Length: 542
Image (tube, rainbow, N blue to C red; front, side, top):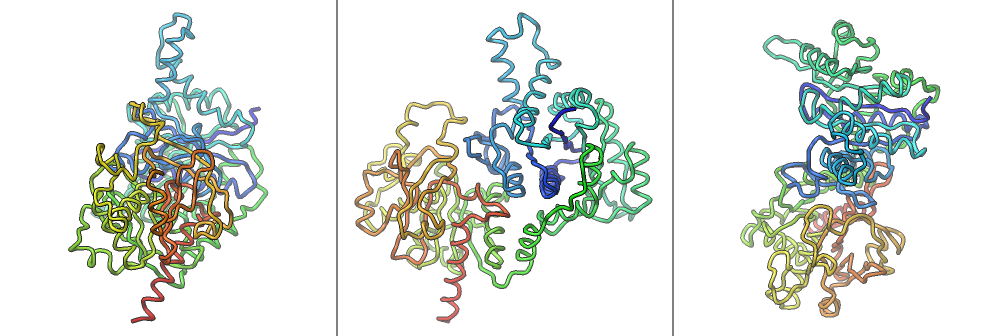
């Protein structure tokens, strides 16, 4: 019998049903019962990773400690489980094919014809089992991107079929997530799309062990019986996944439906322990019953798509719950910010966050937002590009270096206060070549950030090519723009502050990637508190 159990989550009928949330919720319940759990995502696209994808195309690119650029679902996994993921937790078709082709070039297949079966499927199976073979986990959940029937997903489904046969039913199971739509004209829920989806899965040789049905309305007993009969599953294995007010409700909803119980039963694992969700439910209680409210403006370039800033939005939820403050985030497109629109766009805000991004579009709007926050003492938080915009703004408007810029925007600028990192100057490939992953940072004692972290040595995740230019450091510092976080090995400035301002912080790294339900990120917590204090002071004056 294999030591590690495997759970595969597939989807049908429609995309965006929430496979990642269902996988994360089940993993949370299994973890709460004492099992060591991790989740991985198999993405059917041919990109090696999402690092070169536009945020409009794929949402945010999530970064792990070991420097992997991954799917945003890994953010959900970490936020739910409070366990770090790695390169092994996200695999794309591009990475699979690249590995197989490299093996072929090295002559590893002994002159055989390289084919989808067995070579591609073998590679997929190896990737699925890397985490299970590490002995760190009792259960590995694998979410398969796309929907059953997609051409791109076929090798993954075939690999699941083979693995299930090789490992046995007690060591591997398939959860199929489908949609049970409500037809207003008929006034009823319809099961036919789910039946067809399950049939399509069976035609690929894979039988669903558990059916999770996304629905707007509760499933009746008769409807569950019908789905069980026609989809070849036990009635107790028909799980209702009704629309929830927040994704953080889903683990409790799945607990009520018995998803974890039927999973453990099918995997022949003990279900005696009652899931310990005390901390989780305390978080939900605080999140749903805030005592105060603040309004934060998120100044970005991709605000039309919420998923572009998914981790930032979730970090505000965690920090808000920690402080029992509802954080109302208003997305503001930086291209729409001009000197004459500043007051109407951001004058009413309690805090301003200038978000990460790439390229020159919308840059001047971000700089205007930074200036407004600095001059009006509004709490400011700049992340990655947002921090760099703060450097440019201060250099232009306080130091009087009017042409200060970043070489990312103007390659031949005479005053590159932000410049391409030295080790990036000879790199031509775009994918996976930035400064990525966790790096050390030493904080200045007594600084805002050191107070927030309650320590002076930290490690945070990065994703950038350009950096603070130390040539201008003494000028900036002498004018009151302090570098309060520095990489101890390279001297790269990671954090900037204006001590004379109530709360003005910029960070080169991405703190949002480390915020979880169990451990809200200290900088977001401090920023939310600063916004609340600013609002109170403003109201007292009025």
